[in-house]
Length: 167
Image (tube, rainbow, N blue to C red; front, side, top):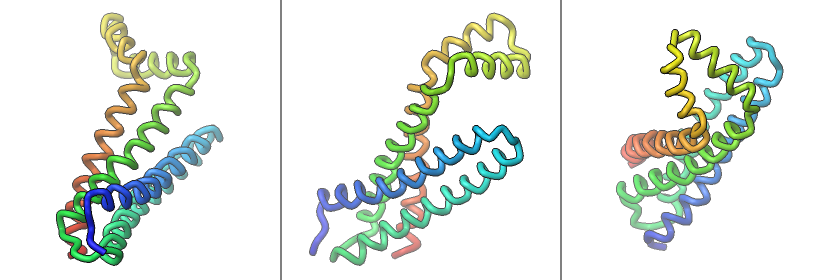
């Protein structure tokens, strides 16, 4: 069977769900670990889950590209790169959405406390604190946009590297 643009999107949707699902699960487990209150447990869980997420996403992306090559005839380097970029776009959408939801779920008093502690640590003046607090109101949207951009850029670079390594 030959490959076309719709086929690449269909495969990207499936693999984007896998990669994004892994990332969202790791993010959720990190959030659950932070509820324990133990700084050692929080740090250990974060490091372990970051490692699982990092290498898991790389392996899933590589498997997606190999699966595309095995399932369809005439797959070119450009096709695997397209698949990787689309997987990054779709999985990034899942992760960015989950992170924005977690930010929206944070209690406002906890956010204010954290914000004031950061301001004190950075020796912000009251004018700088006022300017920075304007950003705080838009934090869920900013989190979503920048996380999605980061995931897409990281996934694009990863797909370029992996595409060349499997051909």
